[in-house]
Image 1: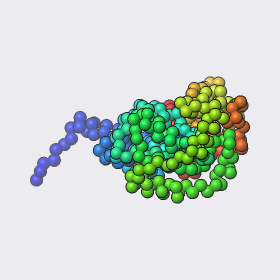
Image 2: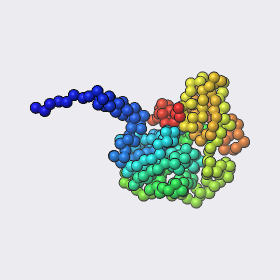
Image 3: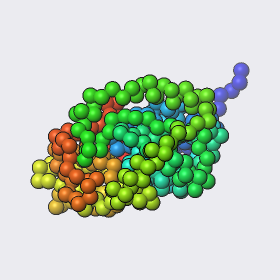
Image 4: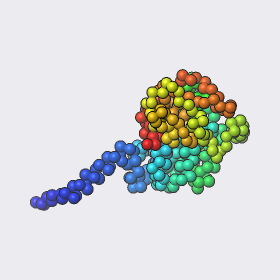
Length: 309
């Protein structure tokens, strides 16, 4: 009979340390990165404010590797990835990607046989596909598949959230087609019409925005914290740029802002309000009493995706 060997104290400590490290990585979702180089399955990156793009990213993930938050990857400087398939899901802001998504694409090193992108939007996509394609090419990437997906529009300046949530935008049907296309490695860029290009050009002229900075704004100039703030600190956790701070004087907002509106949608007191603006794009809210979060995504999910602490 083979004689059993006892484990030394040093080996036992090493084993316990490995188990503990693995548990921490698994709990944060980053553990899947350690094995992705071996498995080489599908990685999906996302940016989210109210949960729409996170929900879609979850549906497009392969079940082995959780979708990865772009703000968290930028914070931790995790920028090199390799897989069979790599996808990016983000919300369209004025037909353009959020600045943090652009920053990620410009800094990341992505290696995959198949690249796909699913921008989500609520009203008009206009030139979104061509804008992403051009951005990707300047970063050295050729995306095989780009298809937009219409969802609830959370732009408070123009839409009543209560009315938006009543609309059937046929999300399951859109999603099923995209899943089928990606599984088949379809080579496809959703077409952009000349009318849509003209609409985007008109929007840029009307808004005074430019494609380099898009909606990059000053948090202190755009938001004010009202006296009914209860200092719950939710805004400090859902902001992907970490602009909100809880101080001895209460909550303050400073720094560059992507204008994702995660803060204003998540505030339970509706204490975060827009400052008045001369820009016609940034007018009063359609319904100051209505806020939105994707029904499949929890507040904790948004915090985990965006918290910069």
